[in-house]
Amino acid sequence: MKSPTLLSILLFATTALRAEPADVLLAAATDTELQPLIAQLGSPHTETRAAWQFWTGTLDGKKVVLTRTEGDPLNAVAATTLAIRRYSPRLIITFGTARPHDPALHAGDIVVSGKFAAFDGIVSRVTPLDGGVASATWYRLPHLLATAGEKETPAYSFPADSAALAAAKSLQSAHGKVIPGVLGSANQVNLEADRIAWLHQTWGTSCEDGESAHVAGCAQLLGVPVVGLRVIQSADGKPDAAAEKIAGETARQLLEAIK
Amino acid sequence: MRYLTLLLLLAVTLRAAEPVDVLVQGAENLEVQEIVAGLRDAKKIQIGRFSFWTGRIGPHRVAVQLTGQALLNCTTSTIIGIEEFSPKLIVNQGTSGAQAPYLTLHDIIVGRGAIDYGNFTTPPKAAGMGSDPLHWTPVPQGLRNLTTGAFETFPHGFAGDPAALAVALRTRNPMGRVFAGIIGSAHEVNLEMDRVRWSHQTFGMDVEEMESGHVAAIAHAYGIRYIAFRVVSDAPYEGVPFYALAARATGLFTVNFLENLPPLPATP
Image: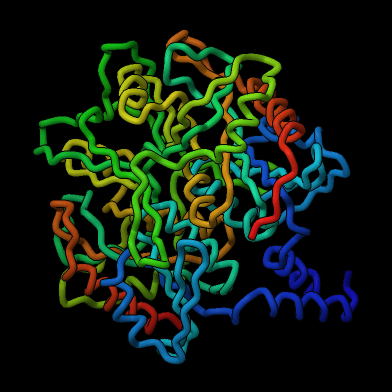
């Protein structure tokens, strides 16, 4: 298997199936977050696959690819998997807005990913009919990461890349504090204060969005470093275009800060 | 060592094998065991963390895939399975919890529909006002239609392929009964009977599990035919706890299904 000829054949085949590798994959939920960055791309190019879209080009001298996650775990993981296979990024930046779980956070603050928690896993307690539903008594169900050798590895959280996190922590924002924390995600909009407090306490989440921790979990499955940032939006659950715009600007700053 | 590293990287990124007719998925080892045993000319392929076994069952070229459990694993691995093997049909099968009292251990639900039921928006409630899951509003899975640009939602989930459904309903389950029904997916194990009843009433769900609704969405995005089978491995109305070996029933049923399924036409 170490024959140079075989290696050449494999390299040729790879070139045919894969695009030129990217330095960074930038993943975000909305066009408001993505389009300002797409508009700045040098040598822009667009590709699609099934329901997912990819914009490639250069930003700040780096080869980048951007994809739209649609703000939910399924689309985010699908788009991330396709992007990793096609563009082999060395780093993923997941960015956007989030609703606060930590009462110390305020609108405009930016949480950077100390780590990620996909908090959608639950096991409820055995309760008979007419016994009610008590979400505050649910147990956490970890993600059982597929592991080579037909094994599973339970994970309650996913790590961020330490060098990229250090760069993220060094960012300055005119809109609020930059704080390391736990980026939580699920396809949920939680507006019950008691449940938000329970999530914060049980999962340790600083904030919630629709996809960041799932992107991080996918990155871990496929062995790609990841970092995330979330601009805290108003807590009413409604889309916040101003916060989305800040998220795009901050992702651009992070891209510049990463060596 | 440098060549070895390169080759390992290439192994992840290159298409691993010839296209197959059917991609057959299970989330756990027990769920793929009987099907792998049923393969002729079986060959194992490892792609990153994910294991595949190719071979033939009946007239079909088949890749059996161990997807791992729940959305994160099954979405990642399904994309890899589709991109590597270009299947004409995806069969997602395994174990599930009954959501309706008529079902018992070893019964099989053939999915006339598969839905992601775990997504929701809660009404606002102030501190001290509690949490009320039975009044959360479901959020349907959506997919971008890149032709129109619209983000389309699927509040009733995704329909099973009618031809595959018809064959499955004529296929023998060696360990129980077979019904057409609705399969619901979320990263949840619901043992509160009021929520089980709510899922059945709200989505028409017959069983709950963790993958088929997600894989259905991906198959829809790619335009690939899709069917899901779920054996009842726990029946909370009867107090039957999870019985992992029930996976044998759906594995054997899937082998019978593939033997009954006529050759699939070439995809356009």
